[in-house]
Image: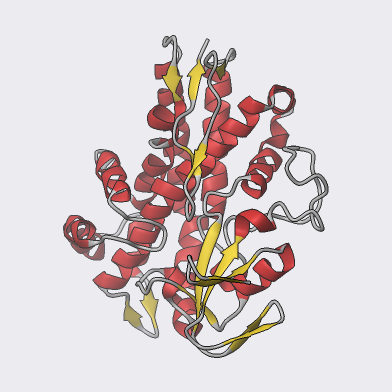
Length: 338
């Protein structure tokens, strides 16, 4: 259906949203320079460069950094009478993990968070400060590459030519924006779902192998980006409707995750739910390359909190309230650590 206020065609059923996200004729908006904006052979070449870096030695660096950071943050909360998990945990952990994977100084974590508040997202956003900050790091990595993900990007070649500084910065921006915004919101919703359902939390505590399923179920029920916009670059049929070139399609990922034709009792949070997967990190050629890293960060974070704060529960009278449209999640999580 057409929504005049949003200026877009809305697609909400699971099958239709999944198909639209993978449709070659629908491109990311607004225009940018991240992987989400690249198409065709250029997109495949850049993705083939980044993907091994996110699965190789850089993952080991991220794992070690994320685990250490999670335990430090959790133990800082242990002596507190009351704490906000969003401000003191969720907003720090994912950003610090991506910063570590890229091999950037830990001190840049706070700077990246500010960039995210100013508009840096997984689709890019404001890049002027990021460009200036990265320039000396790019020069050093090109001259003396290491094992980090930034070195992987700086030494990679497409068609026999190295990636330009602009291309590398665009890829780094999408990784930092995704970690600083999307993963932080997803982690906040994940913790909120478990604290809202103490029986599910106890099940995960007793069976740590269920953590990936609990994370996936939270992404299905409360995705951090419930509305994903695409623009038709040529005439295309979406969900049985013919749309002209230039038409904007709003893929309602949040609605797709609660499609009762696909997920029985869709509003219920159930870590034992089986069946088809969520669409929180996209589908098709533009499925998020950082999905595995985000899952690892969430697992490290939950394990650290459960280890350091065995009595973790909501502060008296508090209830989480998700906020936002294009990005969504609780902005405050008041808890009693002990």
